[in-house]
Amino acid sequence: MPRRRSQLPRVLGMISIAHAVIAGVVLLVAALGRPFPGRHHTADLLFWFQVGMTVVLAALAFGQLNYWAWARKWSMVWGAAGLTAFATTSAVLAMMDAPVRQALVQSRLGLAMLLCLSPYPFLVVIAFSRETVAAAMTRGERVI
Image (tube, rainbow, N blue to C red; front, top):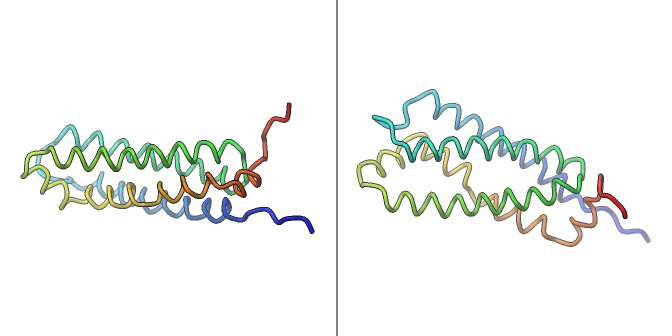
């Protein structure tokens, strides 16, 4: 009996689209309102990094839905970058001055960070490193 192709990439592709849309809306709301009084260079960097991560996730989602081999590899890279960003953001928040940190955490940008740097990157790394997913995502793979 032939084995069925794993549906996990398709499910994660749909979740990735939903995640990117929600994160995009939150980032748009954060961009329209002032996250906190005054401008802070670190907050701007975090904001634009999150925008980039969201755009890349949206592109990866379509590759995941179509079982492209490149989408598996780059999804794991995206997940590792997301985990690194979460750790970096936590370290940056810990080193900021108390008033700036409090304003950032209470702002819309704080909500955006929670949505964009959620546990989803961890799930992506775990799911796309599975052998069944690797065997399913072979579309576009070169055979030599």
